[in-house]
Length: 202
Image 1 (cartoon, rainbow, N blue to C red):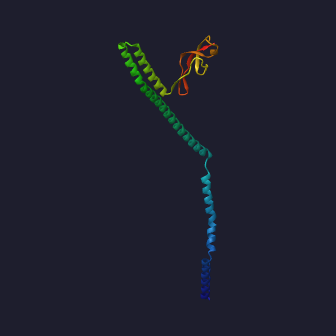
Image 2: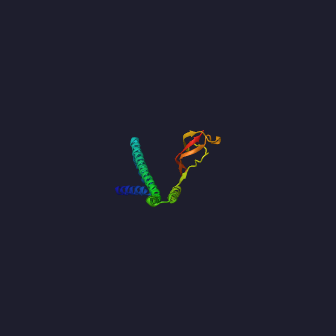
Image 3: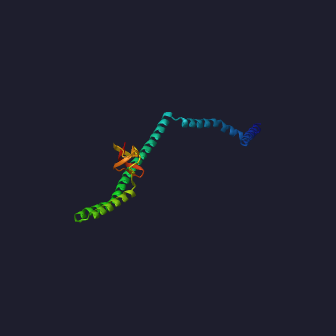
């Protein structure tokens, strides 16, 4: 009897083991029991990641904005300095070009002055001075200098002319008009660089 009972128990044990091996649901249930713990751990990590102090975030944004502002200010300051330097160099270069073009006129004046003591003809002196003056006028015109029209009878314009005095008009049609020019006015391009000083008829 005991031998038969022992064999029957071994048979049941082997059968139970075989059934467990053939039934994967048992193992899956064991894994599923541990699954909630893993999910809770993952959720805990997400909470720790999103848990950022708003004050720290604002301070970081402020620091970034301040850095951008300083960079922009530095770039603008460098641009301002560079343009000011370029403007100064341009003015100096323009003056250099103008004076280089006027040097031949200065040479002509110097030669004329040296020739005066030995020159007996007044007409020759006048001719030489006219040549120098015409040369000088041509150079200034090439540089953009234009003479203002202030001929007798021209309309007086306060934006262009400066009335230094008024005199009785020699003719009725010259009342309120220019009757004489004391000092000529000039444009440089379209800009008035010197107003004409004129006499007005009344």
